[in-house]
Image 1 (cartoon, rainbow, N blue to C red):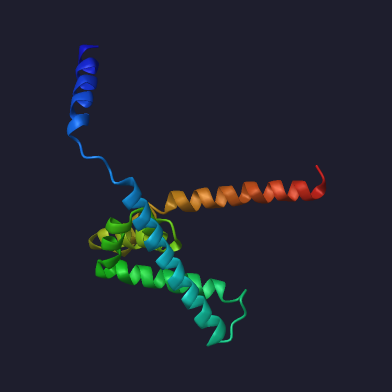
Image 2: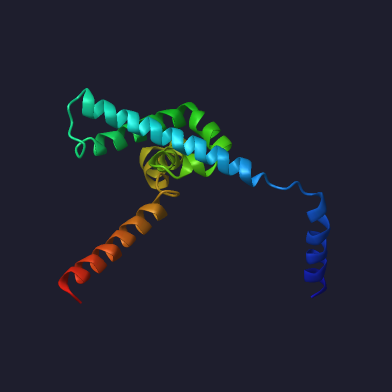
Length: 151
């Protein structure tokens, strides 16, 4: 009991000496970088539509694949990590952040070999996102299906 009180007292004492996080600046950086990533994605999609004559519907998948490729390449060069340190959630939320998490884990464990290193550790960070996405899609699909039947 005394240790818990000392811990709380210490936390209260150091609050006065800790710098306040720059919430507004962090939000602004995340918004600008995330928006820039989306702008690049829109430019890539426009390229597929206008230059390669894809339909608007068909241009979506190659656009996402191109963004993933660019993100993985920038992660391999160490550039995307610097973008992430600067922008925080602005670089983590788009699909590029997902690709970055997978590529980073693969690079980190490459010395352990292809199977036991890269393949087994690649989805450590991204695996939970994949599982949640699949489960959420299933639940929403079932709700929509039953709603369509008139239940």
